Image (cartoon, rainbow, N blue to C red; front, side, top):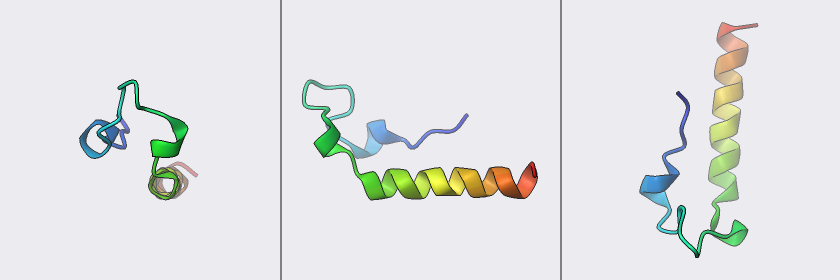
Length: 44
């Protein structure tokens, strides 16, 4: 399972205040790149 643990880092997670502007886009991008790097290293 892959998770960015948003529920531990973002107080807005699944709350009425959970809006696009509350997302840490840089963190999401880094997490995504890490997953892609792992896939490329072990699958390709």
